[in-house]
Length: 237
Image 1 (cartoon, rainbow, N blue to C red):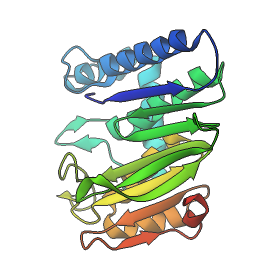
Image 2: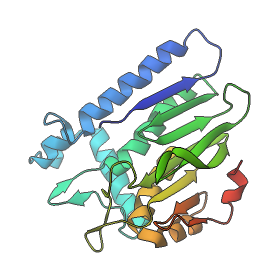
Image 3: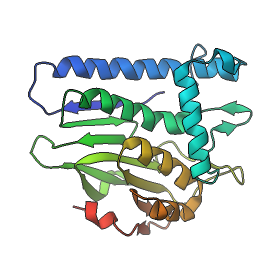
Image 4: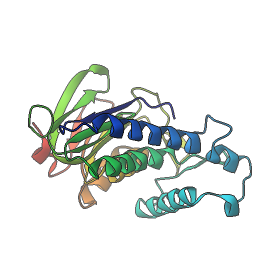
């Protein structure tokens, strides 16, 4: 799906390289199945008319998760557009979470980043909880906020790298405010799917994060004003 992927395992083991290879092989398999840019992928074949009775169990599971997320977010999470379906807004976080489970079966201290979404566990190389920077959406070389996370996920939705590409499903219009919305959750799956839905709501999306148990958020609007949820400060460095 065109995502850069970074995997770091801190634990001292001669199996680190083996597990990193397993993670990258897994991401390749996800790309082969869900990429809308590959005509041979299962999602492309579905959009070309493959009937549900011929879908894989993994695809059926992901579609069920998408329907659940749509219900939980009042319809603001929507994988349909122009007669096609694209579950990438859920698949990215879900696949990182699955990769995290693969690594956690053997290791306790690791970092996975794919396409800007991050799953962490344990401690980094300096024996401290992982520190994650939130970029200035108008200057991506500048970090405007740093958070410390020992276990969980950090996901950011925004228009500052790919341009306006998230739509409000209620209006059909591209979202241009806020320009960045970061969500911290108990897993990257939860953080990512809610970040996508909340961003689609516009500036009101921070309220969805505020009222959802286990999530904290940090929103930057087009005037570069930041709004954060009540307990976001507990993660700030």
